[in-house]
Length: 83
Image (cartoon, rainbow, N blue to C red; front, side, top):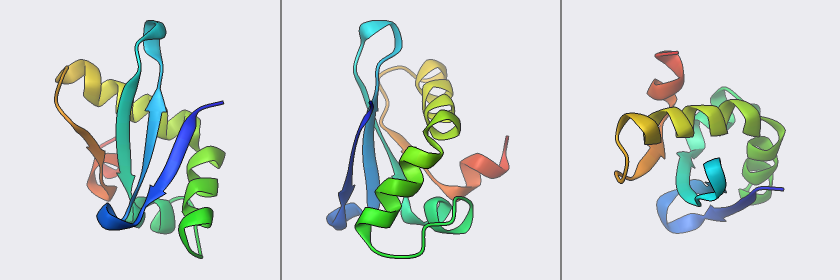
């Protein structure tokens, strides 16, 4: 299972994905988790929304990583609207 935690200081869920055995850390802001993926409460519901939609979120994080290796991966609602 993937790693994911709520980060109050950045209002995001930080998670890790492991393409080809390499650990990539990324984060997704609260807005897409609430507006697109249905989170309704505090940090725990944001993490739950990440896990429920990890396939979509992880795929976008990997796409951003491959487009710009080494750059921070921060997913915002606008990233999902570009899909």
